[in-house]
Figure 1: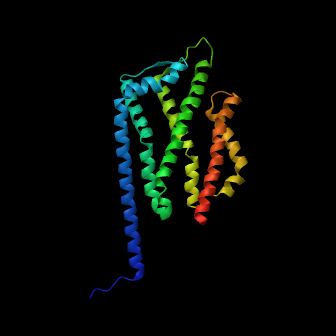
Figure 2: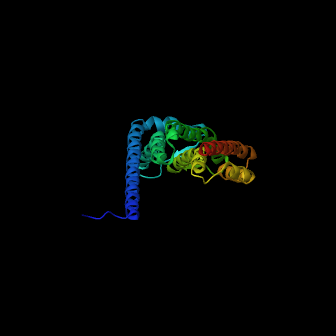
Figure 3: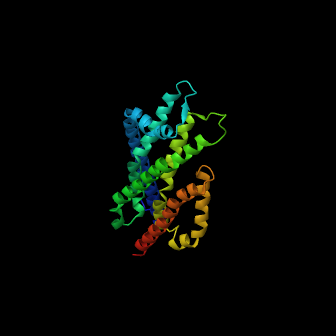
Length: 251
């Protein structure tokens, strides 16, 4: 009769299987995320003319910005890039759903039922960030870009550079506005605490003002404050979210 493995070998085997199952879960979550991006990208491609002409080019029209295509088939490749990035933005709820489903084993059973609300809040934060960039940051950036310099030099811009700025600013703002959800997750795993965030509040405000000075075109202090205000509010909201997360852990 075959002898049973010792307890340590059995535990090691279970841990190994658990790790492999974890990798399998990650693989499927990545697959589901990519499927969502592909479907959303196809949908964006169907409406690519409306997306480019009536949404992404609108800030340029408002700022009287002259754009030029400087590469053969440049607009074709540009449309593909826009459709892909727009597809990611549109599929962001599915992205967050797959992310939180993957992280759900780290949550308590009573916390897992709030995943849908977490996904909604995460998606809302991202969308608010994108909207803030579109209606506030991008107009300020283009206004400064058009007005800066001598009248003897005409400010014409390559369309690829224009779209690169637009899409990167939209994505960056959406990610920055995820600060409350990042605070929630770091607090949940014990890395971040409300006490720590309050202690370094002054340092964070200085860092936020420095970041606003970098992102804000020109040296207009009003524009810098306009950008810094929502970032400071996000930091305060993150402290509140971290406090709520700590209370749930204690319970």
